[in-house]
Image 1 (cartoon, rainbow, N blue to C red):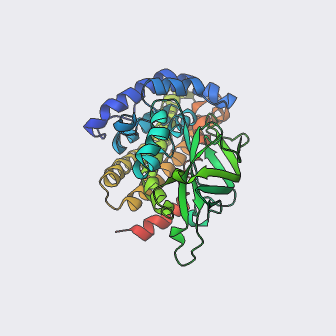
Image 2 (cartoon, rainbow, N blue to C red):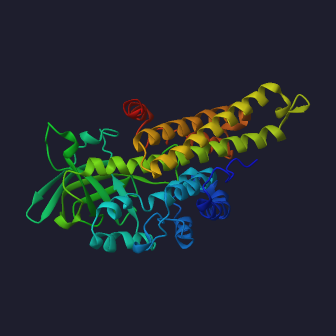
Image 3 (cartoon, rainbow, N blue to C red):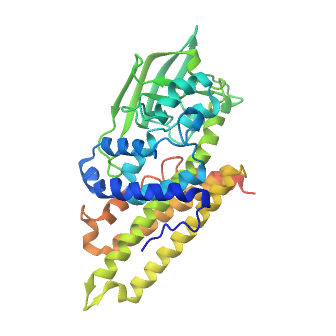
Length: 383
């Protein structure tokens, strides 16, 4: 069974999909269980991805990347996440936040920070969430106060991918306290991780996506030059809002890849496993359950690719991104749950792919804006 066929994928994105599939089969899938159990950062696989030009390649060609567009990134994402979500997340986080600089930053910023990421010499990260604030972008309390020709950063960030491993992160911080316009209170900054006052440590063991590392960051009188401001002061909220629309299409791909993994592994198991003198797949209840899984999957994948086209074309991006992200990630949790049931007692064994998928699907429903927040966006932006 192969659910990620390319008939739904735009023709120009099929070559990158084929590259991603070959890489996933050679590098990600064979090592997934080992890295999951060890909870180690997949350094060698990341380096292989960089050498294969499959990491940080959304970066425009003028700054050293391949300039992959949103459909190409979605095609790649499906393949990586079907193979393993933890390793896939590490590969994608290597350039997390770069889009904000190459879309809104200066040529000097792109030359100094973006080109090294595209060329595999550096890694980036994005610092938005805080210990007490996740989805409320207007509520972030980390501050950036202007002091002469510098900004002084103070506060904490939590759940920050590559917070330890990155050479620099894009930081979202409060630069004003205008109660009449809370959407103009935050800005974005480039923060090298070797700056005095920047301290980061890994968050302790997670139950899922264990090959990806997140960090708790503390900023204490951390000084950066004023030229590290991205775009204009006070524009951070709107920059992130647009960035997350694209990001939620990618997270839809996370859900689709995970759902494909759950269904494919379950299909193989029930056609091989015998009970009462028959394979499990001979039982009508199982056939109906598998049919429901396929209905959910194909519906979610169709919506994801439709939403990708809408966001790519700038058509009510927030609405379509929220629809797709919510549906795809919840489909993944649904089919993984059913897959666990059909695996029976073997479903709880660490060696089983379905057990890893079952844990991993719990994360995308939360990150990039929890699905409860997505429903607010869907209702508020419905055409």
